[in-house]
Structure formats: C-alpha cells, structure tokens
Image (cartoon, rainbow, N blue to C red; front, top):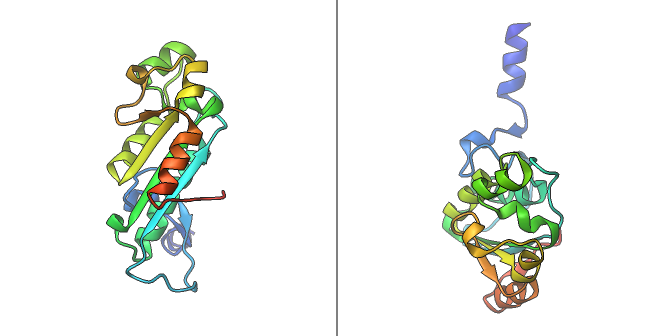
Length: 170
C-alpha cells in the first residue's frame, strides 16, 4: 500500500510548485497533449484583481500569475519571455500591504506577501490603484517593497496596453 501511494504521488498529473520558479504557489496540471507553444513566444499580459481576500487568507486571483509563470516555464517558455503585470484595486488594495501594516490592521499575517515578492523577482510588475488605495488608507510607504502606486487602475491598464500588454480575461 505504501508503494502504491508513492507511485500515485510520483506520477500524478498535478505538478508540485516547489520545483517551479514561483515556490509554494501556482500549482497547475500537466497537459501532455496541447497545442505547441512556439519557443519564440513572448507573453505580455496584465491581470486585474479587484476582490480582496478574506482577512488573513491568500488572494487566489493573485495566485493565477504564479500558475501562469510555472505552467509556461515547465512547458518550455523561457522565463524572460514571460512579462506579467498585476493591477490591484478595490478591496484587494489591502492585499498588497507590507506584512507589518497588514498585521496591525487585521491581526493576521499577509499571506500574499511571499507571493508578491516572488512575482516581482520573476519579471512581474505590480501596481495598486491610487484611487482605491486612498479610499482604504494605503500609502506608498505601507506597500510591499516593489509594488508601485498608479494614479488609478484605469491609468495602469491604459499604460500597460500602450506597452503591448494584453488583458487576461480570467
């Protein structure tokens, strides 16, 4: 029985994110038969997250960026050819607070900080909407290091589009 469990774990189609660029996040399923991805493919994609996580929990919408990176690198896309942007607004604005501030406000650790730090280290830009941030009393000094304050989410998306980013519909 012990060996059967070991075999199931080894050959599971669910890939362990610990072997991927983004550690501890971004699990995905291996799809052995899929349309080929050309090795010269460059992805420039913006993700929009407006719904905040429950206090003290991870924002699963932000985890989609880790999934995108891990999944595509595992299937042959060069990491430098994956350029993502995360635009955060609405109640998700507090999800990019540095852990010290998040803990003061919600008496819990910010489960998004480790993910955001790894995304930033893996060619991802992260913007928070200045309008939402102001509403939620989030200032640039309170953000996770590397997160930038945009005038608005609309501004960030418009500028990213001008830089060749497409908007991920999920």
